[in-house]
Length: 113
Image (cartoon, rainbow, N blue to C red):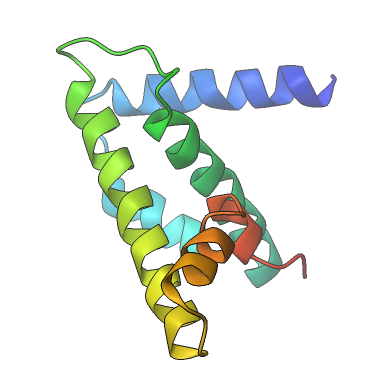
């Protein structure tokens, strides 16, 4: 099975999981947190890429998922603002801090371990 088909199958499985109102989210979260630490980081990198894709102006949404798009945009904006503040604290002026803070995607701040 190719990586693309594995990813597509995982997305479908997740969709099936969340389509059940009786799901046990606590069990899912605890299972995720028991994963190897490196796998947690790699998984979170994929989640951050998903947040960035959903925040994109290219993301297609309607009334059913508009709140998801808006929240993703706020998360990205908040992240970029926090990064801007951290760069300012390092002594960069506003222009440099903004430029540096926006040059990376959200997942780029998670190192490969």
